[in-house]
Image 1 (cartoon, rainbow, N blue to C red):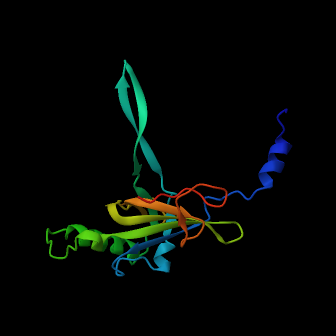
Image 2: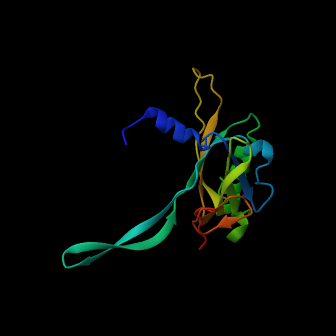
Image 3: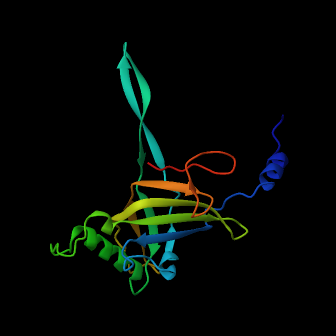
Length: 193
């Protein structure tokens, strides 16, 4: 079949294509003092659908390397957050980090080890009809890196910074309540240990 731009446009317009700007984020700590409220969740201006990898385990035999499937690993999740003058979201992340590693002055009395410092995050894609379409939930999540805030006299932009989150695994489903671990026409990939 010869190439045709009109055929391409007709086929593409038959389906609803997902827009990268239609999403919402939820960040929850076990401690409600560090959980983002709606007005702070909306400050997350950029994120990503989380990635997963399966490492190749090479086995050498007869001068050749044969690759076997290894363990599934999960990359860190990075968010870009708009800063408000009250530093509301940033203060929560800083307090979350103090809670799991101790204060900046070395005081470690506030540390609550174990699952007390963990939480979860959700990224939900929204369709052009305004309805939730797909949701990924990161389990046992905690902030691992809080980015700098750039200051510049020649800039009139709004302050923003990044936060990198570590987590154990993610699940995925068509709604927040229905994570799934199979791939078929009605559901999509998820993963539980």
